[in-house]
Image 1 (spheres, helix red, strand yellow):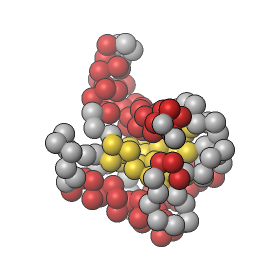
Image 2: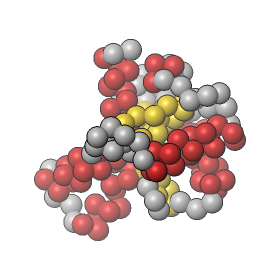
Image 3: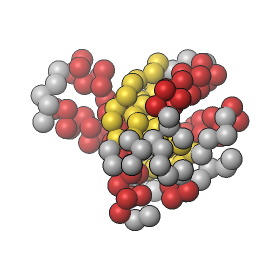
Length: 152
């Protein structure tokens, strides 16, 4: 299966959202109705095959049938090396399992999540670093869900 548009993701099943960092992968999951994204876990990056196995285990446990990967587009709209890396991650996932993968522009997602954790949640720097990746994954996935719900 190739990379798909958001509107082509399989309806009626949860989706998994990913925030791909250099050292970690933030994971979030949606409900089956695509109303809300919830932070799930932060995986420490290792070998790709190990990362994919852990991700597929999380997907299977939640019945997720699609993946939304945050695409770190530059502020001017261009795609740099981090976008290429995210796209490669999606292609490599599909080589291991026939799963639909879509991408969502994640510009400023980590900044928005950090601001929320500081201003609204009053979390310490250490606690923020523990949570930022999975919260950013939920922020990314929620943006995609909102687009699907309001602009199918």
